Image (cartoon, chains in turn cyan, brown):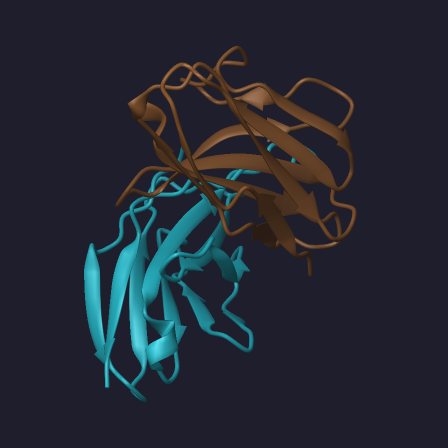
Length: 113
Length: 114
């Protein structure tokens, strides 16, 4: 499976932007980049996903490098509720198959008041 | 969106027994998955639960140990058989709606084997 590399942990202050990096140098042309986060004692929740172009939604933005070998999840104004483990995942699609999500170790985000 | 509930939320079981975990989704979904998350670790995919056919297991997981049922488009069960302390973990159900690439997760079942 294609692998992602993320920093083990990052810290931020409340109300400041956060940029969470992810390297995926072995990504294939049809692999989607997904981001999920897991708040303490909860199941993961979807944040955002993209293929080639940058993406925005109500939770975050996803910036994808031109060569697709890296991406950055951007939280525009961190809140205490954003403290979580953030997972960058490649969804490997085969034919008409949805593929599957293979979780790595993720980045533990700490947000300081 | 889809809301997923799991039963039980937690359990403490004796070595050698089996536990069946139920997963209920509030809408019909195309795919359902079972994951395991050991303390302080990331999630590991156990299997994809296929409706009307046998589950597809990932490397390292076998049907005899983790039998899975999926009788319809909203429900699945995972059984952890002949449990040992190494099976102590959180087991999470997940589902994918055919109209979205967003995968939803249940709250998990925390299993402790003594």
